[in-house]
Amino acid sequence: MASWMDVLQSSGPISLNELNLRSSETPEELVRQLENLRKKGLVIVTGPKKDSLSNLSSEEVAQSSDTMVELSWSGLKRSLS
Amino acid sequence: MHDVNATFILGAVLALILAVATVLYDCHVAVQERLKRVPMLIFQVPAALFLSLACGLTAAIAFSFTTGKGDNLIDSVLGLQQPNPLIRGAIVGLTVLVLIRSKISSFKGAEIGGELLYNSGRTVVMQSLNRKWRAYKSKFNELNLATALAFQDYEGRLLTELRDSLRTQSEDFRNFVESQIKNVVQNRPQSAFSATQPEWQTYYRTLTTLALDYSGPDVFDGWIQFKRPARR
Image (cartoon, rainbow over all chains, first blue to last red; front, side, top):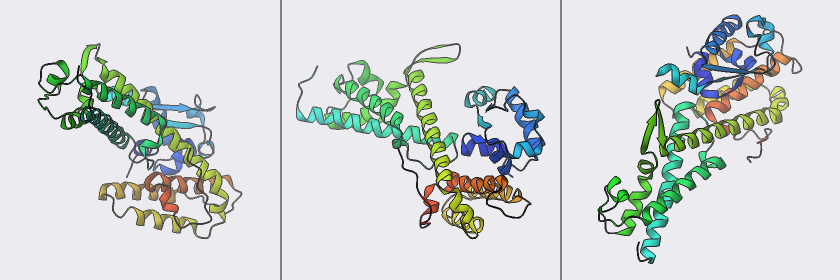
């Protein structure tokens, strides 16, 4: 099953609620993984809720159309080198 | 320098045109590597035209320094021993990236020289294409969300069109899209359908974006109720 990283790679920047719909993870797991990868600099999150991702409920994730997620290509390149 | 004659000018023009084509192709390949699919042609982005034209001019200028005798820097870098200006122009145009991307030096792992400039230019092209494609998808959704919500069996028909349009794609790609469809459909709102409910609107928007991401605007060919955003 395609991971949400593949989704980011294929769609470019995407809103959190749409990423949630296209992901096979639960909203809680998606947010946990997002936070983890953001700390490593692999993912960029922008929008009003960018600093409180881990506090978001499933409901809030499903409605986060103003929070954008995208891959950090420089972070990805750094991590692979 | 050279005697400027018609054949020589034609050689320079050939170098320019082939260099422009080579750079556009290189940008296209880079976009395909990074973003699995951006169904928007690279030359629709002004940054791509600017970068390719700059490289084309570099090729034309480089060509003007060639003699075909292998007795100067450009001749020797490109291995040119070709007296015919037209063939020489074609070779310079097709191999201009070798010239541009030659590394002058490197500092802390970063290449200094044409490579650095070219890669930066290519990144700008990719970002600009990505931005343009994202804006197109948003605009498409904005124009057509209400129509989609009123469309009978939108999900079923769109997914059929999407699968049909991908028949010529590789099995890996089709499997990837199939897994995406499965994820989205699994997350269909549990509540009864209502066009005014935000979760149904998000669901329809996601279906539309999914189809656009993997098949491009052509997936909506024949859907006369759907409007196409003007491409700027």
